[in-house]
Length: 120
Image (cartoon, rainbow, N blue to C red):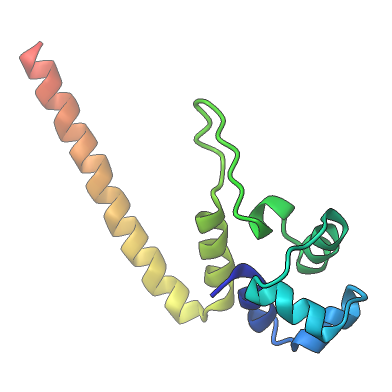
């Protein structure tokens, strides 16, 4: 599912709702959503403002900065948006899985460091 459709559905809006909000026809917005029609920069700005996301997010553009672990990818932003929409119970399950996987990574790094120190 493309980002425009995902954003619209997650906000429980119709194509007409979004089209009206950005002063476009429903047909035009539907074409943007299906990828049959390109958007000019002004339309991208309107949609980014409407959905409260960046233009980079809408067009799947990732800025790659050297040594910048704080950069959030488009996929990560999608996961954050999805996480915000699920129930508290589901969030608890996701949190438990992430915590478990994180602990495994930390343990592997600690084991590797110990092995490297023993070999030195």
